[in-house]
Image 1: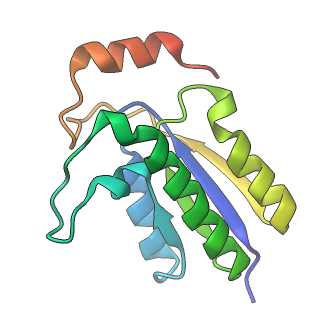
Image 2 (image 1 turned 135 degrees about the vertical axis):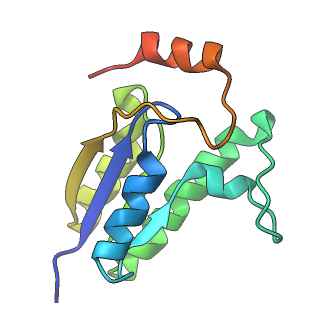
Image 3 (image 1 turned 180 degrees about the vertical axis):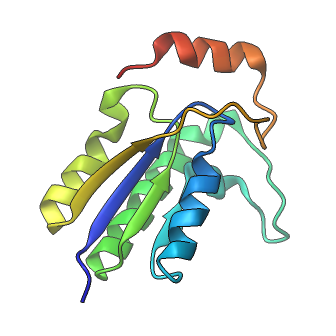
Length: 131
């Protein structure tokens, strides 16, 4: 049995987080659970409809799905911006609590944001980025 792992992928919108997460899932023969807060905004037809007022609920959903997967001994990869270090704290605690190895990967690519995040928003996030 492989080691239980929680991988956090952080980076600005359009940096390649989702692509890297999908590559990791594929390399693990689909044994990894891939989660993103953005998945909360995908409807049953697979269409993405971002609602800023629900961002807190989206992150809570992502954390709870991560907890469920780890409790079921499923390794997880979470791809969110995680601009500030504290935004990863809940996941760090989950990894510690459930004995999962924690990996943090940073994406720095410059691609078109698949969610059409405005450049001004990305620039603001870049200014707030914590190493």
